[in-house]
Image 1 (cartoon, rainbow, N blue to C red):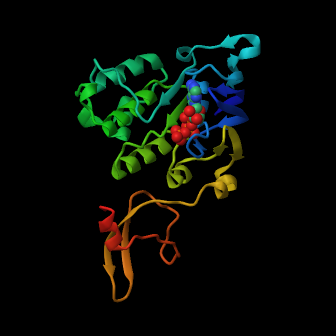
Image 2: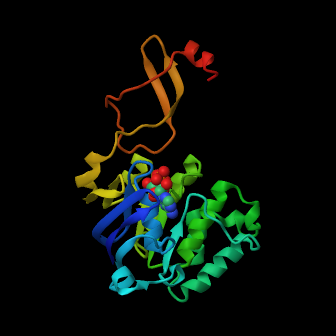
Image 3: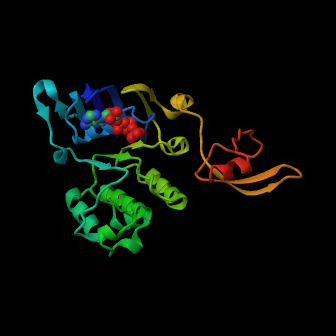
Length: 273
Ligand SMILES: Nc1ncnc2c1ncn2[C@@H]1O[C@H](COP(=O)(O)OP(=O)(O)OP(=O)(O)O)[C@@H](O)[C@H]1O
């Protein structure tokens, strides 16, 4: 359990951001909101990567920022891990080298290397040079490295965006499982990912916090789920349609009524689809 107290305000260019909240962090806290709401900016301020916002940040009774008192702790001293959508690895090292460096940062608090290797499914990548990895592989290694560094909290900004369906499922269940040692804040644009991984939730809108609370209480404010599916089979005689969804959808069940928006085939071919 970590207490994160935020009281931030200020301008990033023309964009105004205000965030005031007390978070009792345990497990995975979701940070959800439309594009441009200020989610990444908020995480960057917490991590100390952007110091344009004024105010105060306190993590477990340690003051990370207090602009009135002239305090701005440098990012490298905050012990906050951050994984971006396009995280970079140390290019001159192999995957194993990247993990070993992180383990040194962690001193004696690290979680077992084997557990992280299995959870992030990177066993086959260990001896590969970092620049040779695909985007999805790099992302899995970036998450593994962040976990090995044993941060006080881990901030994840759309960390699974580059992953295919199976890798995403695998990593989601691992993050859920390893959530206990390091509380996380998790940004995702996927409603189902947010609902299945995160509790509590922070909802942001236009540079401010719109709602915050247990997932069960604020989930009704999330947009309706939109996604894609591939038609596996369709029987025109009885209307029976079998779909394969592009992502996990724990809210769906047999017998439920759902809406469908489709394009006639002739229109699709006109659009080059
Ligand atoms: N350093 C900066 N200087 C100027 N403007 C900035 C800066 N950082 C962020 N912004 C602006 O702040 C706004 C919020 O951006 P931010 O990336 O935080 O949104 P977001 O909610 O994470 O969006 P997305 O979901 O698309 O990633 C944007 O209009 C962006 O251009």
